[in-house]
Length: 83
Image (cartoon, rainbow, N blue to C red; front, side, top):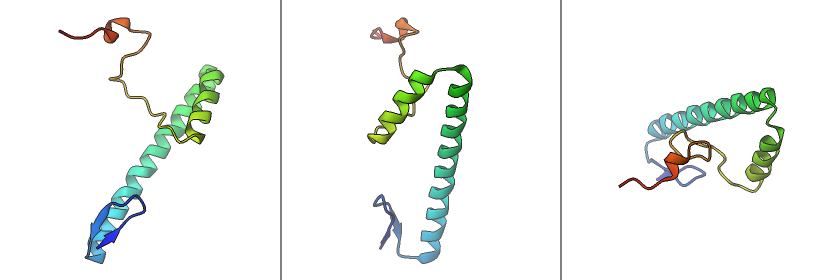
């Protein structure tokens, strides 16, 4: 049984392993592109403090990817519990 660095089982068939690894590489490339676009947008908007904080968090190993579905301080109604 082959496994990737992050312990993802890729099967015993080398061809299957290659396909799964290629899919993982494609996903990682997309993530990198998205993060690069986000950094460029932040630099253009002047959110330097937020950018510096994100770099510190990334260096510490935290996931700084924020999804749109998370409640935010800008929308306090999202923070209220749904009944």
